[in-house]
Picture 1: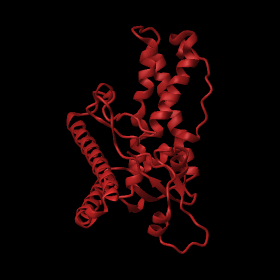
Picture 2: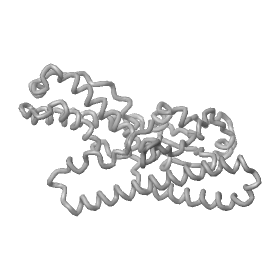
Picture 3: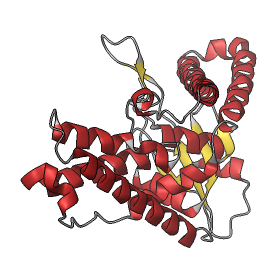
Picture 4: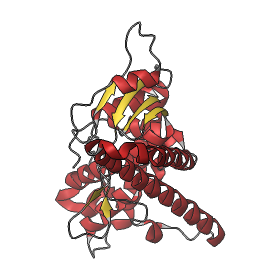
Length: 287
């Protein structure tokens, strides 16, 4: 479910003049700190998983390496906590509620006249772009509007006639989508939490690319860091106690690279750590 980082996509050009320099500077520093913590935590975990697999192939090295592995796991947990402290749980739950919204029906109007015969298609593209971005982001719903504005901008190109009216109409649409997402999140707010086990994939080095590719989305990494209740870091597995909507979204997004299973076992008296260690993910494609 991974996607390129969208931490800077369009944000600078989308800032309004009423956002003062000092506030923007604080926002930028916080965003950069979160990004650094996130990437550092993921790199450390990738190193631990791969070194653990190498040790399994050479058992004679384990007595020497185990103290180093244990210390690395401690540092990894420290980084996980530091990253989780920079993530807000409410946007994670609301992002999970986005998937509950049906595709909106297009209602023709003069405000869309500038798009001509393509108006319905543009609305559909904008909705799907916003839904994807909002579903897999750790940010507030309002911070994903660039997905819509970029679709509208591409649709108009250099044309200006009718553009302000259309942009205002799309602002209203997004406001309505956000309002409905929050309504759905509130409706499911009292549902029981779910206990899940997740196999975390490692960061992948892309051929001919300087930057590594993370198979996890920002939302998935934030959920794993925020709701963790047990972890086997060398094995790359964690147990999460998550809100109902987050659990449903996480299970729906499970892939071969990131298996997810519900750990709730009827009448089981085993602690979470034991349940996690007993779980054997079917997929393990790491080299």
